[in-house]
Structure formats: structure tokens, C-alpha cells
Image 1 (tube, rainbow, N blue to C red):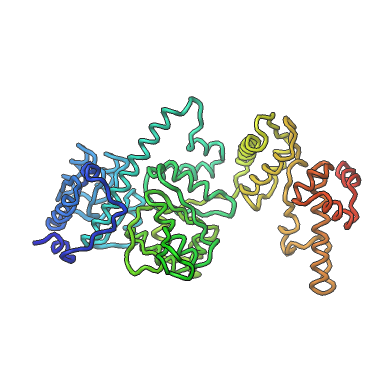
Image 2 (image 1 turned 180 degrees about the vertical axis):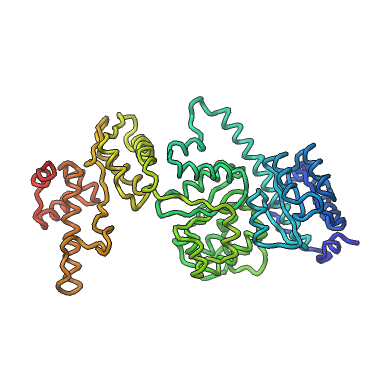
Length: 510
């Protein structure tokens, strides 16, 4: 009986695309263990994988598999979830104990969302329903083998980097200590360290500006995929057709202007990580196409009528929305959400972790001072400045703090003591008051829309000009640079609103 028949598949399955093809010597070095109590299935898998050049062992009993794993580690383990005697999850644990970098794929004839999530969170690399095709097996093991090879590359580069790194250098993982010390942030970092060791998909939530992309970067750089690309896609930044073309690529003639074939970002990220920012803004049609890639790695370019390639990508998604609400509102596919949300990470807003604000401020000060001012003496924060930073509401979170410190760095004198007035805070008092809708205090709704708009703009210009002149301590060149206008325009605007430089400075001293 042919292998394909025993797997209940076509006699001659189409060959999977070759972009994950490995050197025969590399394939032979990859050791695979197949564990299943169905004799026909495990022998069929072993025969097919051996013919593909892998080194394969089989076990029909869970106890035998655990004993074998205690004696020797395997690169890839393909095991049934439901085995008599020892559950498949125990084999998963034994495989990872023997080799923390092992790729473990769980098989089952009774698939469910709950069991798949349980397996993936326990460290499984993938979860596949039975029966599956020979082609599916080849592609799946090809992707897993590719991940093993990428991991070996990363380990080699990391070892070389350690040799070259001078004593006292700060590693990427230790950078997290510089970015937060609060218990809330420590929990996030603990999750980052745990999930970095796996290939599990991660779903990051948090308000805008909390640092979701930074967390994605940390996960990638600590993972076995660190030697390959981390590719970021902002799902809200592009219209549907362009987003699909960017992610999946397109063939020549796919649409007007497609004069040549284009490689998509999924292929660029092959072997590495794809970061999907603002996932809930992705059109549903593209979500459906993305789900196919998540499930089996198969990619079809825009305008193509065939499978163009197979990719091996780790996915990290992020949103500032409540993902469950997005599912209920029809903005996010439920099956895609469950597939991506293997490990959820929520980043608390900066206002809920005030202990981190001085640490972040100091980090940004030194980073931007070195970037903009070089070797000049670094300023220091006064107690009053740190208190002002901690008391700020930080509606824009870490991004707002970062921008304020960079802004201050441009104008500070070397070695200066930083005062609260040196920090260009955004005044949110009017917009944060309930029912204020952001209008200036005492605002009159008298007149039509155009008259009201002019009054709001005038109030903004007066307040803005006064603030930047005080911020620049009366230096009109610095004030013009902050505003992004020339000095002539700045003087003209001040004259328009009856503002005097000396008067503004005198009032700031009162």
C-alpha cells in the first residue's frame, strides 16, 4: 500500500513550494520522533519523512516515548494528544524538558478550541487535526525543520556576540530593567521572558503609546528567531488593496500599476517574526487570508490562482481596543483571535505605574542627550521636576513622556538642573474635565460655526505662543525652532495677539 493511501490522501500529492528547502545534510541532522498508537499512521509518517531525508524514530506507547526522550533529545516531536497510559501533554512536557528548543506538534482526531489553546500554551508549536494529507505533513514538518535551523543560526550568532561583547555591556533583555521597576511592568517582562522561549503567537493589548511594539521587539530579540527579520505592519495605515499587496505580495498584472511581481512582507519575515499592529483595523477579507497562513503557512499572492509559497513566521499582534469587544462588533474574526491569542499580554498605562516614570525619564534623557548633544555634560532632574513628571496624567503614555524629554533635551544647557518649566507638558485640564469637550474655560457658543471656530483658534494660538516663549526662556530663535516657523512669522503671530516677550516672562516669574 502506498504511503499516500495509508494517510488517506491523493496518491501523488503536489510537492510543497521550495522556499523552505534545506540542504540534504541539514535535513539528515534533524531528528524527529513520531508518537501515535495507530500503527498505520505512525509508520506512514515515518516512511514519508524518512524519504524526505529526515532522521526519524517512532513510538507506539506514551511510556516508551517518555523513556526515549529521557535518554536523548529530539528536534521535532509529532505526538497524539490522546494516548492510552500517558497523555500527549506529558510527552510534550518531557520533550521540552529534554530539549527546551524542541518543536512539538500535537495531533488529535477530536480537535477543539479549548484543547488546542491548552496545548499551545503548554509549549506546543502547532496543533493539527487528523486525518491530514501527505502534503500537509511535508509542509508542516518543513516549516518546523526551518524553525530548528533558524534557531541554530540564532544560537551561533548569540555565542559569537557574547565573545565580542565587552564586559559591562547591557544586553537587550537587561534593557527591560531600565524601562520599568513597578510590579505591573515586572509582570509584563516576566511574561515576555517566558513566551520568548517558545514560538507561541502573542496578543498584546494596551492604550496607545504604552510600548506594544517595544514589547514585540523584546520578544523577538530574545527568541530563537532573533537572527531573522522582525517585520512590523500597521494594519490601520494602508487601504485594503494596498495592505493585502504589502502583506502577501502580488503577481504581475494583479491590478493597475502592478508591472512586476512583488514579494510581500510575510515572505520578508520568513524565519522571523511578523508584528501586526492595530490588528482590529485589518479588513475581514484579509483576516480570512491571514488565518490560512497561520494554520498551515500557505501563502497566495494577490492576483495569483495557486499557492505561491510556504512561509515559517511567528506572529505577534497588538491593538489598543478591547479584543473581545472587537470580536463582538465584527471587527475581528473569532477564529483568528483564538489562534493569535495563545499568550495574551496587557501593558498597563503609564499613569497606573508611577514608579516607572522617573526610571523612564532618566533613560530617555541619557539616550536623547547622547543622540543630540554627544559628549556634553548631561543635565539632571530636580526633585520638583520628577514630582511634576509623576503627577502628569500621561494620556499619551510612554510615547508622550519620550517626546517631552526629547523636546527638552534640544533646548537644555549642558549640566543644567532640570526644572518643571523645562518640561513642555501638554495641558489636558480642559479636555479631561467631564462634559468640557475640550473647549477653553468661559468659551462662548454665541454666533455661527465659523465665528466659534475662529475664537477657538485664537485662544489656541495665544496659549501656544505664550507657552513656547516661556519654554524657550525668551530666546525667540529657540521658540521659533520649537514652533517650526521662522522668527518673522513668530513675531507676526505675537503681534497679532498683542503678546510681548518681556511681559510673558515677567508673568511667568510671578
